[in-house]
Structure formats: structure tokens, C-alpha cells
Amino acid sequence: MEQYDAAYGDELVSADRRHIWHPYANTDGNSPLFPVVGADGVRLRLADGRELIDGMSSWWAAIHGYNHPELNRAAHAQVDTMAHVMFGGLTHPPAVRLARRLVEITPEPLTKVFFADSGSVSVEVALKMALQYQRGRGRPERTRLLTVRGGYHGDTFGAMSVCDPVGGMHHLFSGVLPTHLFAPIPPAGFAAELRAEDTAGIEELLDRHGATIAAVVLEPIVQGAGGMRFHSPAYLRRVRELCDVHDVLLIADEIATGFGRTGALFACEHAGIAPDIMCLGKALTGGYLTMAATLCTDEVATTISRGEGGAFMHGPTFMANPLAAAIAGASVDLLLAGPWRERVAALSEGLRTGLAPARELPGVVDVRVLGAIGVIELAAPVDMSVVQPAFVEHGVWIRPFGRLVYTMPPYVMSEADLTTVTGAMVDVVRAHT
Ligand SMILES: *Cc1c(COP(=O)(O)O)cnc(C)c1O
Image (cartoon, rainbow, N blue to C red):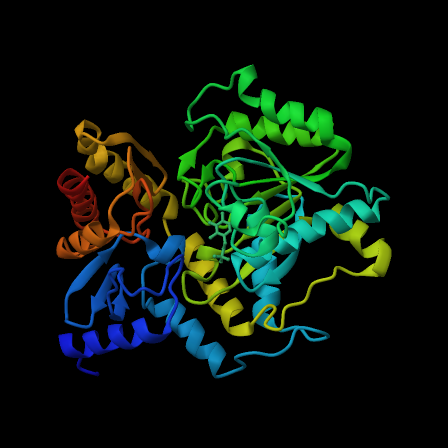
């Protein structure tokens, strides 16, 4: 095993600062940056030997923790068989196995799977499916998308166009970005009672523009990167009804919520509804490789296939990459074979208890928990140059953004480690906000 030390870490960081962009970052080189050289279970190992308990699951993805023996085994077996092969005119066991599995576990009417290479691409695919579907049934005028404020769907142009217009900084790309319709933010609270006025905004937009709308796209139950907000199953059910009334498709972006994170295998299950198109990503490969999937109904697929062009117009080079698909298949099996529901419920309980003291702190606006997601919402944005090193000092990896200090731990996290994570969140918020 290689030996690392603080000097080696410093060298990595300074070389990085000369050449590399990071997510949503500038190249000033002033943001804190930590060199990580290994990861095992729920722990990240820094170059200087320190270990951090991971509270982020690498952005919702690493649900089983890092360096998992079963996922490693699947990766090794597949890489020694066939790391990649083009998907045009060819198929392979990992893709077939994974597609069957996804169709089996997602809501019933979803039967067709398009493998994409990232969440954003799977959203692009979903939007294109909706547009080609409407053309295919002789409704080419249905080109607009309707979404809710506060959403996040990815960073490519189509996906970005349905992100929250303010949070997504649409003005930076005005003139290029298509303009779609935005309904008010869904009413806050998983358990909130649905009042008529809560859906008045979306109903009015559908009444006025329904004939030109191809699809409604939203994140069911949990809006992730757009603000970590929860809404009720009743709201989602109402949106499904409205889509049916207006003959509009419903696209559920379950890239963050899929695979158990909210306490249901898929967030749509809370409402007992099925979308016409569903996007999956993030936890799909257990955090090992980039892969996403867009599922749709027979009706959507058939209409597109019989429509103009006779084909769906998308086909990434690395579509259905066998290595990613093999690991994804192993990850889904691992999830379903284990007591994920109990694990997520236990984490939920731990988050509720552990984060409760934050409610009393000045500067805290809200503390909320759903499934294995815990959020402290502040009145003002955190200062990352102070807060990020403070979390590392506490031995945990939490990556706040804006006014949100939040965690979505790997499902395998122990009660003791979760207590350390929530304790650090409360301490850091107390000391630095
Ligand atoms: C992360 C995310 C995406 C984008 O996925 P990438 O893999 O980062 O492109 C889209 N939608 C939601 C809800 C997400 O959380």
C-alpha cells in the first residue's frame, strides 16, 4: 500500500489549483480543498492520514459506503470480461439484467429503459422523449415544459431550463436558454394538508397553456439541490391528476430520491402514483461510476417509435456501459437483499434526535428530516472558507451550500457515527453562523 503524508497532500492541492475546475467553483484557488486518497465504508482518508466520516454519500450516490466488497467483485468480474462495447446493434448481459431489474422495481407502467451517462443527460432524454411523443401523436405544438420553482434537474441546457430560474441563474444564459413555465414552489412539508390554494398556480398555468405543454417535470417529494425542500404525497397526487386532465406527460426526476433515500424505494410510491417518464441516477451504481436511466411507458415508447423518423433521437457513445451496468446491477441487488427500509428508518430517527438541538440556535430557520435526509436551514449563507475546515476539524465530511447544512449518509452508517455527524452539524452551526 502506498504511503501518503501531508507534504504529498499539499503537492496535490497546489497542482490541482493550477489546472482543475471543481463543481460550481472559480479558479481563484481560494476555496478550501482537501486531498482524499482512499475511502472505505463510511470513511474518507485524507492524504495526511486523517479520517472523515462521510455525511454526503458523495452527493446521494454511495448508499452502501465506499470500497464495498460485493460492488468491487462485480467491477473486477466485469472489467476482466468486457469493460465496454458500443450499444448500437449490440447488447450484453449487464444491460439486460439491469433493465429487467429496474422495470421490476419501478412503478408498473414503466417498461422501457434508456441508459444515459449522467443524471443531466437522463433529464435531456426525458425532455426529448416528451417532445417526440407529442409530435408522434400529432401534437407538434406541445413544445413547452411546466415545472415548479425551487427545482434542480442538472446542468446541461435542457435540464438547466427547468431548474429554478433564480437559483439556476437563468439570466447568465438568457437568449440561449429556452423559457418554460414555472408554477409556485410546492407547499412545504411532507405531512402538510393540501389546500386548494396550494395548487391554484399550477392549475392556472395548465388551464391557460395546457394545449402547448408537452410535460410537467418535477422532483417528487424532495427537491434536492434547489433547496432541500419536502412536499406532500397529496400535492404530488394532485399534479398527477392535473396532468391527466390536461393530457400532459408527467416526468418524475428521481435522480436524488431513488433507491430508498426518502424511506420508499422511489419517492412516487409515497403518493401511490406512476409517472409517464422517470429519471434515475446518482445511487444507481452505488456511487461507483456515472450512469443514469430514463424509463418510460409502453405508450410513450410506441408513439415515439411510430412517429416521425421512426426512432428516438439520442445515443450516447458510452450508452449502457457494461462496467457501470454490472456494478449498478450488483448495487440494486445488494440494496434489495438487505434491510434498507429499516436502515433508512433508523437513520431517520437518529437524524431527528441528533439535529433537534439545532432548532434552538439563533440563525436557524428550520430543521427537517425525511428518510435518510437531514437538513438545517439557516437565515443566511454559511461562509465556506470557515465552515468547511471546521467540519474537517470535527472529523466529518459535510458540504453545505448556501443557507443549507445537510446530510444524506450512506445507509450503512452506524448509530455512533451518525451521532458524530449530527453533533458536528449542530456544533459548527452554533459556532459559525
Ligand atoms: C444530481 C441531480 C441531477 C443531475 O445529475 P448529474 O449526474 O449531476 O448530471 C438531476 N436531477 C436531480 C434531481 C439531481 O439531484
